[in-house]
Length: 363
Figure: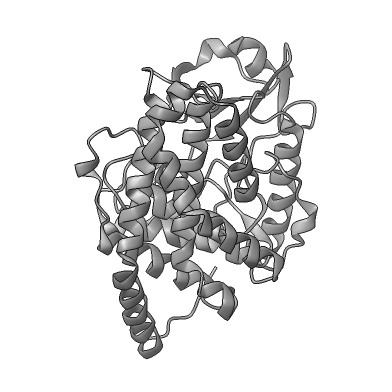
């Protein structure tokens, strides 16, 4: 397989060391390297991304725009294959090769607020640089990816069809999801009222999707652009809240370890708004804190719906895995909501400081 793929790029597999790379759960990724050069080879998971050509087209369209408007920005685009495409198809498998960015690194968990700051700044910068781009040129790569009303509707259908045993096991989780229906209601109101502007959004802002300078930890750029498509800023900010604020991730069974780090929240706000303060509307800024509720709640809904459906979507390692994941996210949600007064005070202080020390935004 490797030789056939590398042949499409004029490379000989015998001249390279090929080894698994990264911690991604969707696509298969390898580092292809020798003493002179290194690449990242990736096979796109077409069970998740059913129209991978849309990914390639989106990235190519954004690349051309950024090369014209922000030529100094580090945009890690796929290398062109011998046939002129940015991908190759071998035995119905979809592959692409990226240049390996030297002196860069990525991390899997936020250990310090500075890491959250640099990541948030890079995701904000990416959307800011594309604020004048015609978002309608992009195609959805996963339909209804962050469609909260759809996820709630799927939960309701799962609840109607679930076994009594699963409903009993998930009783508390079900009650909590129903108790927080107002989160979905607010989302519908925001969209229907036009409070949110459609923008170029990454949609998968986990910390590992930012390249950092290996020595300094300063952000370089965002990577893994498969989910870049039209969306709302609350998706990117909300996903950072969901995955950065607590040291315990969604797999943690001991909910006592789930804790909101207020300094990390401050770092997310500071980094993102340094780039997006002049881009977001006044109304959008009022939903910055809501974004965390939006994404955490949606993930809880998805886990519990899958548990009620008999674990047909997410891979599980033990019988109540999705239930535990859902309860984990519900606990995170409730702790997040409890911190809202502190979040509001944090934003107030950051804004006051920014007003007194304005900084120019540069590409």
